[in-house]
Length: 180
Image (cartoon, rainbow, N blue to C red; front, side, top):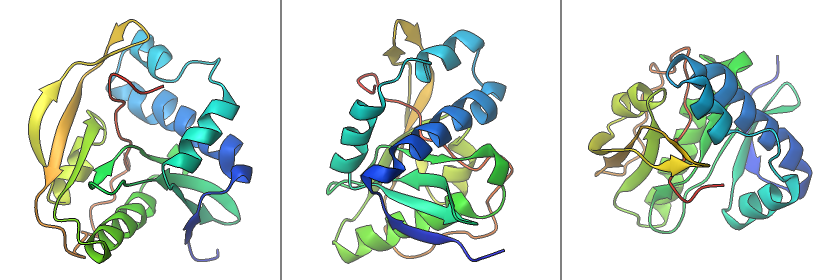
């Protein structure tokens, strides 16, 4: 097995990242969300062209393991993590930890003092173990269905990421009400 690689997203990653997104929600998050919530969050008819444009605009990075995309994340200039998803087949292998380490390192280099995200019920334990705290519980409506997520914040951005916390869940960030 080759080591994991974190690299910038390219347009060629659109299908693979969309597949990771769908699988993480439909498999991993299905333990914490009802079938109608899963269907609203990751519908079959998602437009790959729109997805590709959103990922490119978000300065996304992908995790590559054994030659394939197994996860992705992003962080904006304010320290907001819009998405972090990991393929369920590699849960517990350090992918979420590596992606979060990339986020933290990049934020630290850019002088970002805190990180925030809207985190799913499923991903909450991973984020809590990595020094994020719940600011508020939220119930955004996505495609007509209410979901539960948590606004979480990590107030001190330093390069410390707990490499021992990659649970079998790994992580996915819950959608904001305006997410597509």
